[in-house]
Length: 251
Image 1 (cartoon, rainbow, N blue to C red):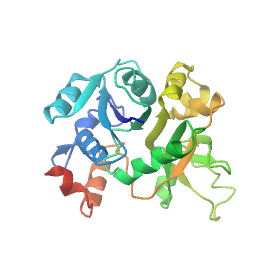
Image 2: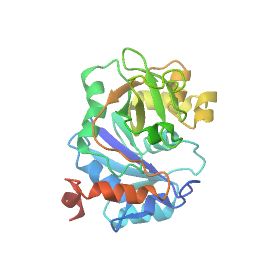
Image 3: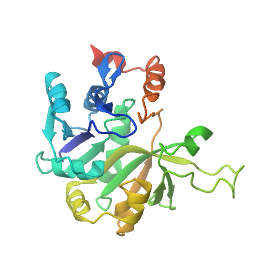
Image 4: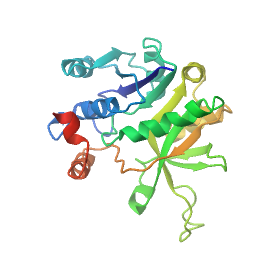
């Protein structure tokens, strides 16, 4: 089974323009993500999907592979779905280009449920939220799950309710920008019309559950700081001070 990781990236971010090419320790962010993804033994190919020639040129200058997509996509999954028509794979992994702390093990965690169970056609990584500031931040999509660990809802608001359970030890989960699709379901997803909660929350995986499909959430460990605003770069660089694989791919 061929597994292809597709990294969606675009320059026109409202909160952080030109974000994919922001330098982190002297290397463009998209390159950090691409190189760290390449370290996963689960992945056979890594491709950057972009609508900006400058991103494509940057990736190719480092010896990577990039494909051009339309500039009309609202969400990252639709961009990856278009790219998946160009690249050939049985499992297509969405690896957000603003997750520079991704670990190879996380990719293994993402694909394992689909390798072990043919009935699972979509997976999404989550981590525990231990910081109150992050739980309240609209930059971190929060999720609630059912007893089978399938997604019930994703929101940028704090869920479950803080007011009704302010001191309880309930499980607070953050969605990560790593989503796995069987190619057959990704084709289905791309043809589904956008849904109200997808647009309200600006979380495109809500489209799947609003149309009645299951998304298996997978808990992973490791510190993940998605780069949403310029200030996040310094936070990532602080974590990089103790990162064990940084030297492996910077050389």
